[in-house]
Image (cartoon, helix red, strand yellow):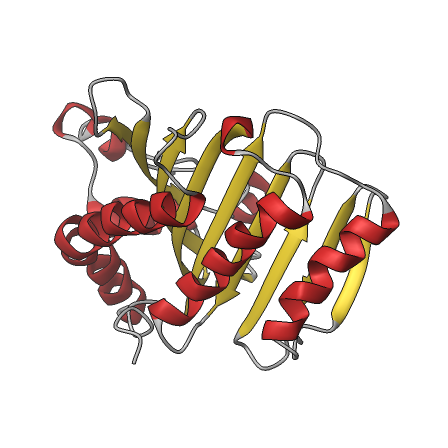
Amino acid sequence: MNPYSSLADDFYINMNLSTEMDLPSSRETILHYFEQIQKQYPQMRNFYSRDKSDFMLEEDKDRGAYRWCSIEQRRICSGQVNPQTVEEALAQHRLTLELAPYALSVSALDCEALDLLMGFDFTYRGNHNQLVAEALGVCPALERLATIPGGTIISYEPSLTFALDEECRVQCRFNIEARTNAYQIRTSEFQEEQLSVYVTARQYGSLGPNQSFAGTLDRLWEVCRDVVDNYVIDAVLQPLARTISME
């Protein structure tokens, strides 16, 4: 059972490994890498390229829950939307990282950054920015600005990044992404779009001699879980859900 699936309309866990050097791009290397992933997850059978240098393998999206992974010029990505369990998604990311050194010649020295993201999407028809302000409020210094007579909030996307070590190599970012533009607000023609809440834990720089990609991923998961469970659910996700339900 996924404890996060009831907090938003869609929940997903994504992993990104950014490299300092370009990744291999030969046909044989790319196909071999994705074939190894497909052996573990046979339903991942939709393979295609984007911009001739980005390659994607994914499951069918029409079920609402699906896996995907991709290779870009300097980035390896893996994601699962609406996983049945969190461990199921993390296992996919570990496999992706464990294959990278052998199939794509990625070294721990070549790591620019390793990210783990927990995403929560709310489907909402209306001004996302106004909704966030109503549900979460604004900081005391800006409260008067938010009440200017005749004013309409057209951009409000709270974001906060903090370091978790003295060297600032392990960081965590919280941010909200609204998808309402000025035209929609001006015309009052809103579409049902996704208001997203992200919590991203990141490890910067090359890994140490006793560190592994999978082990680093597990530590980033501990950071994400702690931030979401103890700081984001009660203060952000639940207020957003309540405010949407009252619209």
